[in-house]
Structures are given as C-alpha cells and as structure tokens.
Amino acid sequence: MSKRDYYEVLGVNREASADEIRKSYRKLARKYHPDVNKSPDAEQKFKEATEAYDVLRDSEKRSNYDRFGTADPGAAGGFGGNGFGGAAGGADFGFGDIFDMFFGGRRANPNAPRQGADLEYRLAISFKDAVFGKEMELTIPRTETCHTCHGNGAKPGSQPETCTECQGTGQAESVQSTPFGRIVNKRICQQCGGTGKMIREKCDDCAGSGKVKKRKKIHVNIPSGIDEGKQLRIAGEGEAGINGGPPGDLYILIQIKPHDFFKRSGDDITCELPITFVQAGLGDEVVVPTLDGKKAKMKIPAGTQTGAEFRLRGKGVPRLYGNGEGDQRVKVKVVTPTNMTEEQKRILREFGRLSGDYISEQNSSFFDKMKRAFTGD
Image (tube, rainbow, N blue to C red; front, top):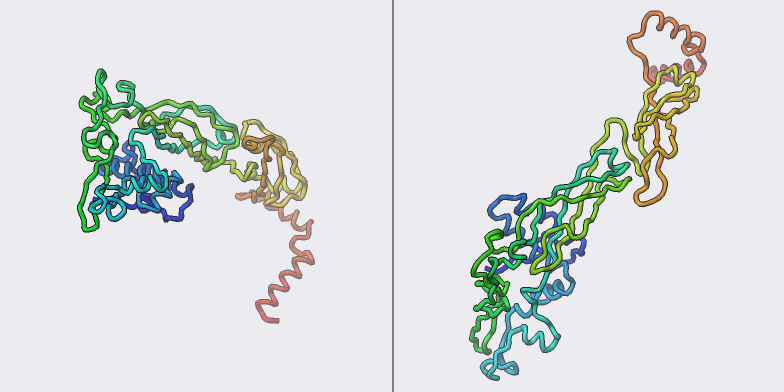
C-alpha cells in the first residue's frame, strides 16, 4: 500500500509555511498521542503524522519530497536502459545512484540520531498568579529512553544485530525487467521496519522499543505579567530522541482563569466600584480593593457621574520581561437606592423642589419638544 501524501497527512497545502506545518503537527500529536488517545488506530496515526513532520520541517528533505516524492531520492526507485546499463549496458542503476552521481545526494542513515517530538502542555493558572508570577511543579506524561537497555531495545547482555535482509541499510531492493532495461525499486525493509537492525532478545522493560512511558515532575517558573495564550519553552523536556538523538522540547501553553472582580486590559487592571448617589453628588474618599490584597484610598470629586474612570498608578500588571507596571483603572457606578422610607422620599422630593428638577427651563423645554414630536405641532 502506498503512503499518503505528507501534506495531506498534516492537513496543509504545499505552500504552507514552516510555522503552519509545526502548528498542524502539534495539533495532531496532541490528538493521537498514545498516552491520551486509546483508539486502536491512534498510535499509527501519531507515527504517520510524526513521519510527515520529520520530512516537511526539514528544508532539504521537503525540497526532495516536493521534487521526487520522497525525502530520500535513493528510495524512490530507479531505471536502467541505454547509457545507464540494463539490457544495453550490462549494469543496473537505481534512481538513488543517478542522483548521487549528478547531484551529490546522500542516502539517509536509518540509524542516524534524530531529535524527539515536541510536547505541548496546557496550564490553567489563576488571575493573580498570572499577574505576580509563581513557581510550581508539573507532572508531564512523556516517553523516555529506557534505562535498562539504554535505548537500543535489546535485553541486557545482548546487542541488536544487523538486518540480514537489507544488510543494515533499512532498504530492500526489488528488480523488475522491462523492455527498456531493468528497474531497481527500493522500499523500507519489511523485516527490520527500516531500522537496519534486528533484535533477537527484546528488553523486558520496553519490549524492544527502546522507550518507556513515564510521568516526570518538572519545575516551572511562571513569570509575572504573563498573558493568556503565551507559551513557555522548556528545552529538552519533550519526547525522547531516536537512536540516541536529543529529546524534543516542552511548550507550556498558558490559560488564565477569570477573576470575580478584576479584569485585564493590556498591562492595566480594571474593576467597577459601586458608590451611592450621595457620594457621587457630595464627593467622598473611598477605599478600593487591589489585587495584592492591600486597600488603596481614592477621592471621588463632587458631581461624579456613573461611568467615570479613575486611575491608581502602578497598581496594574508588571510588564512581562520589562520594567514598570500598568495602572488599575476604577470605573464608578452610581447605585440608585431602592426601598426608601417615607422620610427619605420626602427629603428627596424636597431636594428636587429646591434644585428645580421638576420645573427647570431645560426640562420644560425638553418635554415640550417631545410633546410636539408626538402631536405633530
């Protein structure tokens, strides 16, 4: 069965950028990773996506794949004929041999060290921890190199052997005669799975894979001022490398839980403070809660209207990897009293009479205009 197109596997088009390819792979890796997806075909889909990403993230491999349909032109098959041996010249040439002669190409070593896959961990933190930062320990599920066999998959006291089918190349050849000569096709060796090695006695701890599933505790420093959607990169804490290669990286995606009273706007913290209409009318000095737990005093000038905004300098979010802090913006909301007593209502009516609220020229003019609008006068 032929392999699916690598671009189709990752769900991107052929003009996709390296960043688009990386994001698509991470999404698929999270979805099909065997640690989180127990579907029968999840592991195969994870391996398929990893293989596609390994080729398309490498500019040289991707260029070969776009031109020849494989990251290793030597595995694409070959042809014989006039000028290249076969029936006419007496020698067989694979496509990889021709590529090597004309372009100096190199065949991929199946046992070459390769970096492990990156991991992404979504971390939900409190609003306060995002503002002031926090140190914490996370438990990350991942694969690690087996310490019993040191990653070679063989039982202690034994060693992997060179595959007798492909002689350690990881590729099997088949020759087909045609009227134009003999065609040499190369494919992944079925006996060793392309590794070039055979394990007669498998390690009991990793069943010959060279990797084991572990849960590791990792110390993480959440910087003050971090915002929603930011990522923290921890080098070398991803999946184990292949054939002794370095591990991948761990990316921690930050998600912030909402706060009951405070909100964030850039480097500023915002909140809404209710005040009485007496405080709004006469002015007052009020106490405002702040995120650090300390209370700050703020003056409300006489005649303040609902929606007016005031600032507490330096009470906002520390600037990420920078100097200084934002402000705390306080928006006041004038609360209208309810369930007033008769005495309160009497005093309020007297206030209205003294202030001329019911007979002011402005209000009279306004209501006259409304009357004319409805009557058509």
